Image (cartoon, rainbow, N blue to C red; front, top):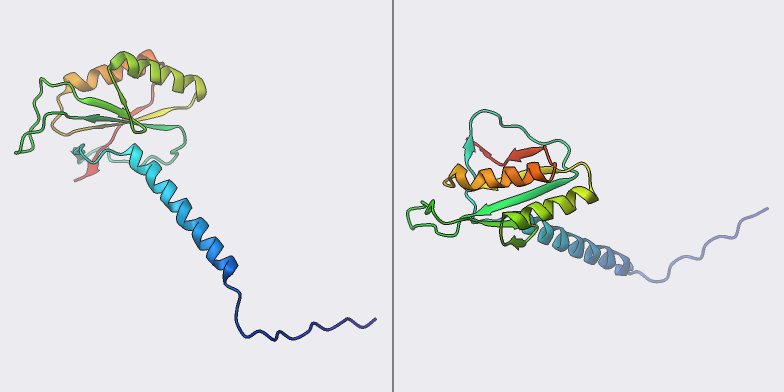
Length: 151
């Protein structure tokens, strides 16, 4: 049985409409991903340098980033240790440590495998980091990592 031959194309132009659709979808995808990544990280936090203990987290699922943002930074880069830093999670500013504990408990109910990444400023004293660790313990979250950058 003979097959019917395809008619030759008379149009010399290539249809690029599907290509434009795919490019537009990719642009939207990367814009949304960029916005989500931007909400996780706060640029005003100066991450401390680490010489030892630098490791990359292989499994990033269940990761929750907590930013401790200093409020009173001096022109020389120092911060006032008496002023409580702001706590930001996913672009949401939490009012106090009780709100942080409740937020972490809700997250723990939704997902049992949570890893906290704590981004605290290099000039921030431990007195402001300890309540975050206590909130994590009260929410029954035991995997807490400190964000550092390589020296």
